[in-house]
Image 1 (cartoon, rainbow, N blue to C red):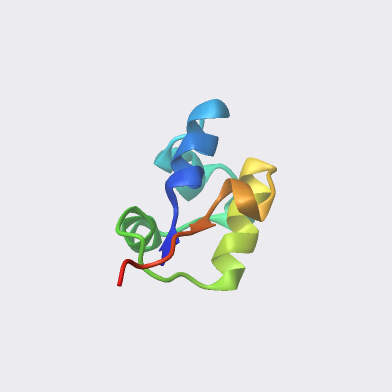
Image 2 (cartoon, helix red, strand yellow):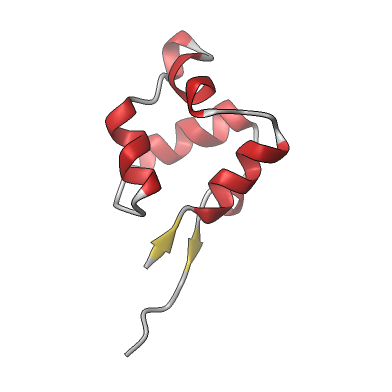
Length: 71
């Protein structure tokens, strides 16, 4: 499973909020429905991950982590 826990930690370190993701850059807006998907650890596009890295000026490992499912 992909977990977006690192995203919320990175946002906290950079004093960013979901408002920042939705409104910081006109060309990089993240929709509120995408933010809901991130909060639920649901899939998002690689384009969205790219935009998150640009907005937060971070690497992909600062956005997500792979967590093995328990069997």
